[in-house]
Amino acid sequence: MGLTQFNGSSVSFSDSAGTVIFEDLGITSFDFQGGDRAEIDVTTSSDSSRVSRAGFRSVRRVSLGVLFEDPTLTELDAAIKACAPGTLTAKFGVDCAAASQLFSLGAHLMSYSITGQMDGILEVSLEFMVDETAVEASE
Image (cartoon, rainbow, N blue to C red; front, side):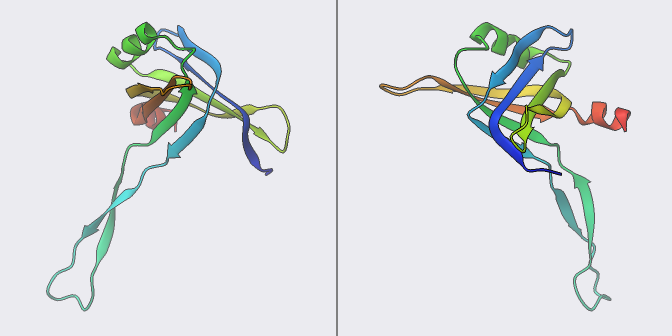
């Protein structure tokens, strides 16, 4: 497998009805948190050292930074109120080739914030929670 590159990457998000909220939007930052597992201590007084078991995996999250050009506030407000998950798709380049799909996941928009400063551009931070029920159903 080749090296995955950030340059040329883009994301798309559509709601549960398939309406595109944003498509092939260039991003300024990307963070995919694959989840972690709790460590459950099951040590008893008869053990000679600590004994642990792995717990359930936490929910995966995707955080994105984008410039405030697309989507609009109205679209973000609608997406954050939606009960059903939308579809989040990310494309990244590999070895200087055209970007190809890295993932397409059911996801809920959990939060967004818009920031800016003097002589700067407004930026939007988006946080998505992966819909694990859709992932489990497809596995």
